Image 1: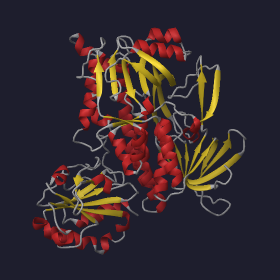
Image 2: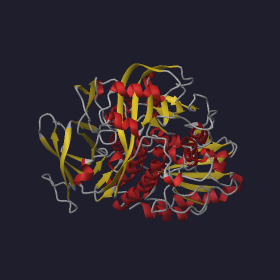
Image 3: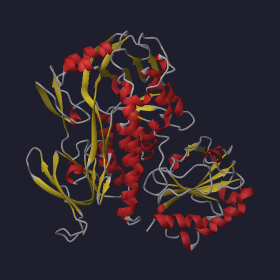
Image 4: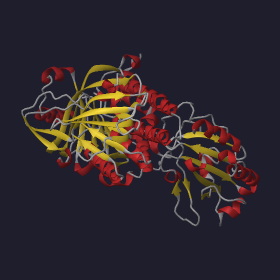
Length: 605
């Protein structure tokens, strides 16, 4: 780590996507960060076997292994599917374009019953249907972790971020009394790291420490944060490779097959022509293979899992065999130590929530932490990271216990009901539970409760704590619409969206708002806000139409659809406060500017 500084604003332990994205978000907001990772290496194997568990990273057995630098390895597995809300977050960080260039864009899926007949009343159809009309990013992106990590790392380093690979966390100390370091600077957190190759020891200091170092988080352990963990007897297999198959539409995005022997089997089309197959092992299979399932055995079972279709591998890139387990940290925030991703919650990959949930963590945390370090917010705002994200993780784990059982072909007791076979058939129940929870699963329906940031709205029909709807507006003279979300990029500032309605009806209210915003009450907040004006209809010049200077850049709502999506009357208008992470914070009437002053007074120092 020669040449790296000994002190940063924030030290992030864990060089996976959650750690890199947290660091990228902070660096984007002018916070100096360093990412420390235990290893930038990955172990690959040749026959007979190496089994890596994404849940606990245990190596069960191996014969001949080769240690390669991760960036030189062309492909490997782990998380791969990104849902619409996650894509919106990447877009607001200006990362989505690069990810889209590499990943496999999926807008459809097919489902087959045990005999290979199509049954599209089940499978992924409900998931794709649920996206329509709710987001402009109405697709899933399948991109293997190597490629998403490479993109995140490159973008982070381009902002001046530092990635220190090959350093293991040995100890940490938190000093709430802010004892000074040798240069007299405050360093509330110090981490001692050791180079895994040379055994050199280095100490890095920072104002905050983020642990994004996986399910067996050293940060969580050293910080003394407990984690409740429960294991199951469910064991799953994942295999990535290039396949030849007679399964129709297997490369449309997602294919599910209701196997009588291997649970609800999924086939996902991946980047670079690869396909991932996932299936469950029965108890007899678990006994048969024990913990020493070889690659060839995994491939043979994959072929059986997709019957009656043929499934031949031209090559296998990666595979894993692992037990489903769930864990949840008692808290995500302890003084100046924060946890994100698998470090604070873990679950199965059955509904592809792992990376998506971790991205949500990073997106929620970065702007809050950046604002605290800039002196904008009290440190207590970080408590909202725990109070918002931990209940989401709790709910996800409750759902995942049901999903993982049904995917494995078993019916959990709480779903057992009287009636015919169809009412307790695992695949039918899986389709029902998936449909009931689909908005949560794709991220668009995740909501946060009232707190210091989320205050009951006094106008609009969109509640506080909900995702701000993404709507189409037109710039002056533009024939092609612009998405409102693209006008609210996440650079750590709040957005104040003035829905001006029809100026002939709202003119006096607009003038009152202009007077209030130009007054002393808001003067200390405007540099932390980005203003946008949305006017009903098409106008030749915004200031002339409003009768006063526009609020930030002006855009037009030709058919009042944008106003309607926010529940704003064109005759009354409204002002909507959108948090940096595109969550509704507050809304009030156009002529109630004092409400804005009250809201921001409780948020900003």
